[in-house]
Image 1 (cartoon, rainbow, N blue to C red):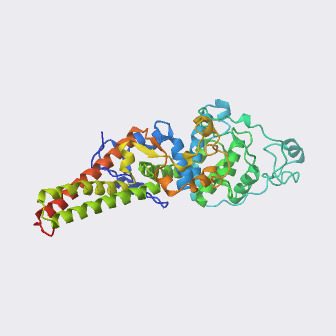
Image 2: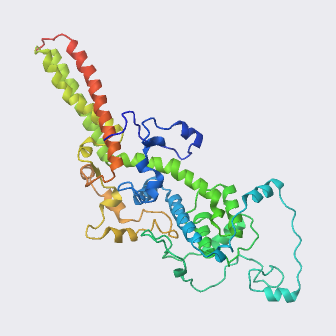
Length: 442
């Protein structure tokens, strides 16, 4: 089973992105079974995120692509964390959720249009009240002590028990961090950069986790800093200073999700269609050029000879092979690998100990850890090992079967397109040569 012969693989989306309107104009006309940009419904973004696909189109493969190819894994890491955060927040008792009120965006927009407010006069309270409120979230800075002069001052505190943070319920736990960072200091700097003067309420649920998220994804110098505009970052920090409700992330989440859906996801599917590595792709193109050259030389010699014109049809075989191989290679496919529905293992997949369980190996990876270190892979062992492999070994690298049925259908469609195109061009070429009289040169 294949898709429509007019199918086109997803176009590469640059970092500048495209508007939603322009994307709606570029919907594929391949049939009702295809989503926008030539992506089947079976390989949609939601299906991949929810675990409804098979290798090499799983969420782990998507993460590896963003980590090693696009160098933008922080978007997916933040998105997965937020999905889990919403689930855990909604599971809280009502009396706990009421401590973190949702953002009133209508009031927020009205305040923005109203312009900057005049500075408030400092609140004057008695010393007795200040003494009672000392050490609480309601203490007034500047009234009593140096301790409250800076609400974001980092003080020496004992190590926190991360067991109070609930991990993910599935096997991709994102909330177990093995490294301690000065997240309070980074978060304080982020609040200061956004000119936020309000001290966050520590009584709200998940406040410590939100502080870590700010230090990891929002603050300047964070290990996984998101590519946010100054307006988005400032708005987010002001929201998080007043509440830990998931609605505080609404504007930022919209940007992250649009980037994942309309840029990273189409590029991932386009990259996954390629069933071989770059050396194999170059080798396939060379093979196609060789086949086409042999066919043209053969039909030219037969035309110049005294043999019957019917013998010239034999040259159609290498010509068809050459053109189809070149077309498939242009689409990133090797027809030899496709004949077995195989693909090359990715460089980071090659050096996994076969005796080691896959689940154990995955748990060692830090890309699904929401509070992990920076997304750097230069020190991973496979980098050096893969560079040591010679070119011949890379061309004929280890192969594995393509498990995802929708991906196999896309590859079948491209292969059929290459055969039909090659047959059409070959028919014209052979027809022209057969119309030429015999040369009788030998």
